[in-house]
Length: 173
Image 1 (cartoon, rainbow, N blue to C red):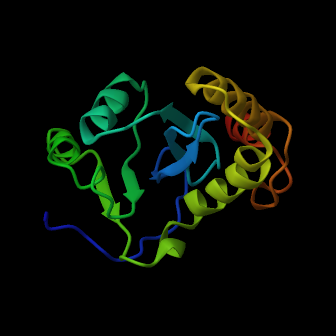
Image 2: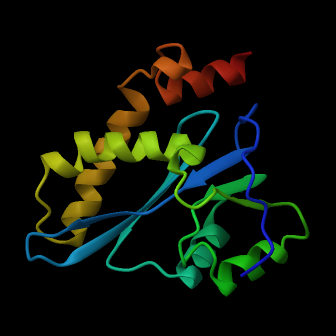
C-alpha cells in the first residue's frame, strides 16, 4: 500500500480546492448491478461529475479525470481498491504535486462528510424513487435529478442558495 496521509484536513476555502468522491451501487430492473461514481466539490457542493456504469476501474478513473477541463488541488476518498489502484496513484504522481490524494481513516466515513451527505440525498431523492430499465435509463434519471440538485434545490450550507446560485455569487463577488 502507498504511503498516504490519513489525517483529517481543513475544510475547503474556495472552488476546486477539495473534491470528495465515493461509489454508490444500485441495480437495474434486470437485477444487474450498476456502479455510480459521484465527485463533489466540497466548497460549492456541486457534483462536478457523476459516472454511471456497470463497472468502474482505476483505469476508468484516470481516463475520466484526463477528460475533465478542471482538476482539484486535493482529492478525498475512502480506501477502496479503485482509489488505491496503481493506475490512479501513478496518475496523481504524474501531476508533479499539483494534486494530493487524501484517504480517510478506515471506518470513518464522516471524514468524507460532503460526499456522504450527497450520496444520502442521491439515495433518498433519486435511487429509492426510480426503477432503472437499463443503463441509459439510469444515466438519464440520475442526470435529471442532478440538474434539479444543482439548479432548484437550495442548500442550507450555502445560505439557502442552490449550487448554481452560490457559484454565480462567487463570480460577482
